[in-house]
Amino acid sequence: MYQSWEELEKNCLCCEKCQLREGRTQVVFGVGNRHARVLFIGEGPGEQEDLQGKPFVGRSGQYLDKQLAAVGLSRDKDVYIANIVKCRPPQNRDPLPEEQDACITWLRAQTAFLRPKIIVCLGRIAAMKIIRPDFKITKEHGVFFEKGGVLMMATLHPAALLRNPASKPGAFEDYLRLREKMEQLGLVAPETFPDAPCP
Image (cartoon, rainbow, N blue to C red; front, side, top):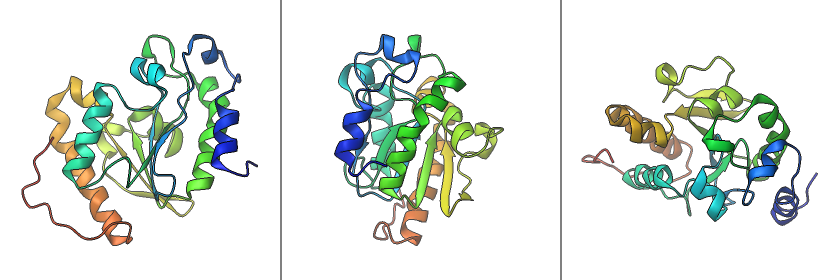
């Protein structure tokens, strides 16, 4: 077991557990508040994430920030963001099951340090790995499940929303539900968003 975030990150950055190491520019460990009680989990880094070494910094990451800001949250203060796999799959393909299995120990260690009260899965890959293998993202997004004493919810991946803007209003409802749940748990102060625009 790792004794600190620093030790965990140092070991993760040297990881050679699977074939994704061959094409990476750098390992994408995670970003956000390491004392946050809300953990966002994506599937894996894209091109910009691979180049910058941080998750969700490309177009989809900028949209994620807009979604968070629209409900009064930010990645720096309120959440921590990590991925199922820490290295970019070639051509942004879905990470293979064996790659996910090889990498998941890093995410489990991050989760152990965070002890989140809420986990939000970004997209179907993360939801199927974290919540349930037969999870249906289009039907079950925005629904809270309890697993191991942690509340879990999935929402549509920001990249999918950029490809299909018609899904944006429904996904924004997920963020409003998240904000409401955080208020109920005392993770943020109550705040009203009567005219919150869908980003």
